[in-house]
Amino acid sequence: METDLLTITQIAERSGFAPSALRFYERAGLLHARRSPGGRRRYPRTVLRRLAFIRAARHVGLTLDEIGAQLAHLPENQTPTREDWAAISVGWRERLDAEIEALTALRDKLTSCIGCGCLSLERCQASNPGDVARSLGPGAVYLPRRLREPLAHP
Amino acid sequence: METDLLTITQIAERSGFAPSALRFYERAGLLHARRSPGGRRRYPRTVLRRLAFIRAARHVGLTLDEIGAQLAHLPENQTPTREDWAAISVGWRERLDAEIEALTALRDKLTSCIGCGCLSLERCQASNPGDVARSLGPGAVYLPRRLREPLAHP
DNA sequence: CTAGAAGTTGAAGTAAGCTTCAAGTCAAGC
DNA sequence: GCTTGACTTGAAGCTTACTTCAACTTCTAG
Image (cartoon, rainbow over all chains, first blue to last red; front, side, top):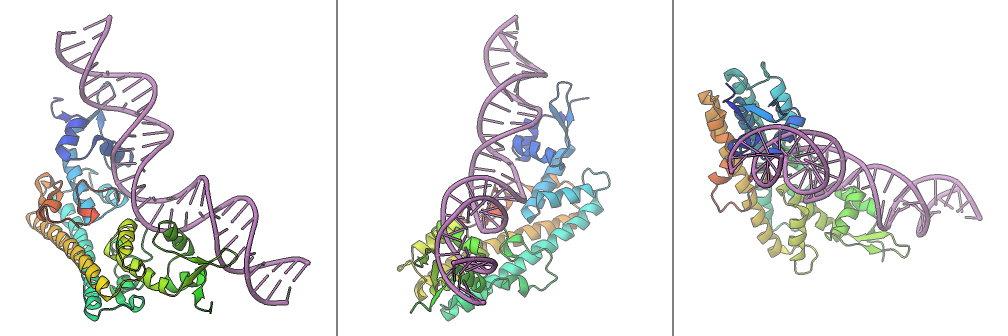
């Protein structure tokens, strides 16, 4: 049956991604669509799982490139199995942990700044170039872009 | 004396911002420089404090527009006084708190996903469009761009 | 005086993640 | 057959925060 193939509009509605985003993801290699005889995109339902994965990964802060890499490593290059998902989401968790830790450190520094009425911002911990990054040591590979030095071009 | 006026290179070295960034900030209205007879930029030392403020604000996640607005509201339009700084940094704190809270919520959802071996990502909390944003309620005005829906164009 | 370093400008380029647009094709109903 | 609406494509545009470049000008040391 062809009944389980969905149009781009249907996928857009059910996934929350705009059709233009879906086409963009396809060009970026994150998604693949079959085609109707006339050349229109036809998606199997499994693409919704893939899109849910993508959205979750975006929430975690991964770039599309990183997401693409993770999807590419999946055995079937389809949707993650239970074990894949477990391994991947542990990585995500570490990433979130690192980000939370960095932000918490920054908040604490800010708090002490407020406490001291710290007008000499030049010497302040929160304003030192690279300070937040350094405070997490060299192991903080997954530091969110926002907290890497020099302030990344987001 | 002119002794306390610094060149753009000197400010760049001491602030950690590239000269091009300093010129950019000037065009953006965040910074102002006096000029030498020949037209070169000459900065008073106070600009370093302003730059420290900018760097700290960037760490917190403010856009240059937002930073510009905050700087513009300062009485002297110079560097913050003790009270200014207290008020502003409290705002920053709230922002950091909101972001930390959002990320923590996301992490917890992810953890429960791992726990349940959750393959039906489509139904998973972490992958719902808007879920993280909603979990903080309508009051989360300062939700970091990354966690607003639809996933913002960073 | 002159070489070379340092600085100036406006314009264009970069990166990420999409959106928008123009121009044309396909599909479905009347 | 024809009108609509859904879809296709490639190319260009958008936003943020800068960087890079070309073509000059200004200092500074010798």
